[in-house]
View 1 (spheres, rainbow, N blue to C red):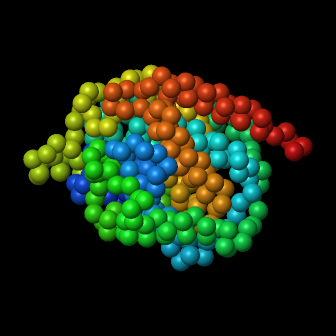
View 2 (view 1 turned 135 degrees about the vertical axis):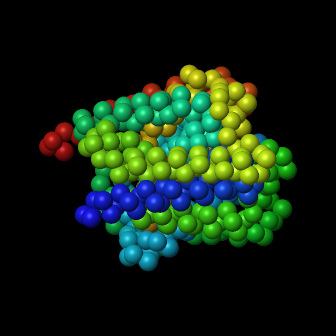
View 3 (view 1 turned 60 degrees about the vertical axis):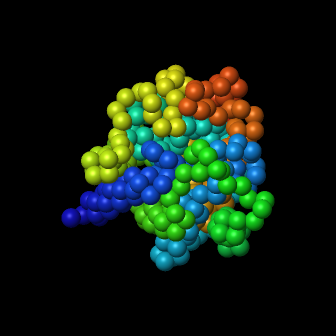
Length: 360
């Protein structure tokens, strides 16, 4: 067996484990079809520290902390902790901001998109088509020379800032001081026990770090160079989560699989805006070089550009709920529709203005 086959096997195994964990977190208390959702969990965390006051989505999510820690531990163990940054940080912040606006129009990141499909939510398939189209648009610009500035080495202290912030958030979650918010109803009140969520995040973070797992990268690489390794991991998450949902439905008396468009948990059935929401997210994430999960993993490796992207996602989540941009189970808002259209235009302008010639 050559190295390529070993890498593919490792990615598939990692995908299976991620899918099992994603489905199992719902059994332990997370909202249905939301075992993992980077966008939703960053939104909840922003609410937990008071950056928005939507009472139903306020909880510092241990999974986010665990993902950063898992990546950090794996990177340190393999001597891959390599702090780097300086590649157009403000541009990355803006791209992260609008990637979140798109995700909250759909009500989920690419990871949750897979878990929603595994739960029978056909709205997520519509969003998947938009996601692929957004990635294809990004690839169009990659093929024409799109590039941000090169990274440079930065100090270990700078590369450690986001992991330190994650540790502070963990302390705040455990200590629960009066200025930290906890939802008493809605999705924010639904969560697995802290220890289980944290351990699950660490495991997934370590696996994603070792395999370079990326929801955007799988489709991007297939379009660009016909490489299917990451795409196989993508499929493995879907299949394993689907199998676990069917097993849980058969053994618990509770339905974890509901095939259809209507009555899906924390979802709406407006096809156009599900499509456009993840179109925007896919487009922005290609220009960023990875999905929200991948950005968290890279930040754990000391990449400060990814840390800035996470801040953009974080602020985008707070902004979306403070200004009524996020969709809900009732559907998208007018403000949200306008924001998605603006986001698509802004991301296209960023793509056009960062085309490099051969001389550059």
